Image (cartoon, rainbow, N blue to C red; front, top):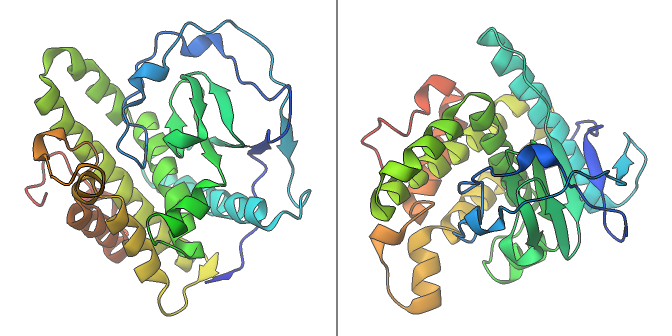
Length: 280
């Protein structure tokens, strides 16, 4: 993967910062629904009554840091900004750029406190994507999904949840939660996650047209390998030795690969309605 893009101004690096907390009262009481957790974990338990506080985060300005991993995720974020600016403009809307917070160990968000074990996630309460870059080591070592394009897919998937939040898709799922059984709700959450995979593929399609990067042979397979590795069926098989479809929250490996590839192949947001599609 040859990268030609710029850095984003919307990255916050709070690693090693004692003041690196995000305590935003506006997120109190928000139900966080499956916001891009790559281990199939429901973030509802992270919601807590958080006091309004100040942030003392170190904001990474363009070109201000030479950390290669940090610069990479910053470049991916900048590319998603360009793509979604254009997509929202086509819809007559304005895209709000999310923040990406890089943390180490644990972090406070408007959705509550999370540690690195939960993996990358998006918090709709503060419109931020959170990632401990150590996740990429686990993605490679635990799941066998190495490569820069696999890493880019992770960021693009979480940004996909931000897009769903801005378009009101996530809120519809939130409102339906109380009237559905756990099994019924899980089915909707799968559709939400698969749409975020589609949005990640759509980003990759358009980012190439913007000349943000050039794919090398094998790059697409890296992203598909990552999607395959974190399917519910594969994760359940690895953890318990059995597959329980009613407990799926993110979709099977085949479904995740299908929807990412569909977004990548079509680049058409109108093709990403996973909620009415029979192709699940």
